[in-house]
Amino acid sequence: MIDSKKRLLAEELKLLENANNMLSYSYNTCKDIGIKEEYSFEELDKFEALTSRFARTSDILIQKIFRLIDILELEKPGTVIDRINRAEKRELIYSAELFKEIRYLRNEIAHEYIPTAIEEIFKQVLKLTPYILDSVNRVEKYSNENWK
Image 1 (cartoon, rainbow, N blue to C red):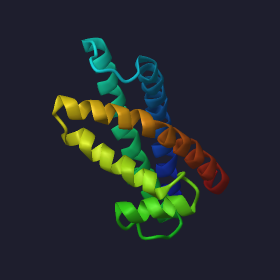
Image 2 (tube, rainbow, N blue to C red):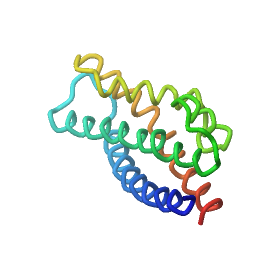
Image 3 (cartoon, rainbow, N blue to C red):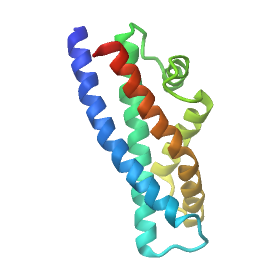
């Protein structure tokens, strides 16, 4: 049972690495574009890719990786907030409050269609992406130390 969970974690870590690489690429591209009052269609497309990759990577971290780590450490997975709080205790994330903000933003990304709100989402994604990138590094280190 534990070996199958370790294998599943290894598979999810590979998915996380791929998602992280794409997120990092999009983040650097959009950081160079910056926040503006108006965007070209090409720039909007790049920001749309960033927000999608932000949402996907945060989902992999919170919904899959943190849950699997809880299971491997014999914790009940619990709620999203429980997983985030335990991730902070394990030092997998910089701050539980920031990751709650990331989770809320991920939900906004999935449901927002008003153009003025989208610009605010772009600002928040640029602000919070470095915390996801940092967490991916922490998770990889933690996993290597504990299950490899």
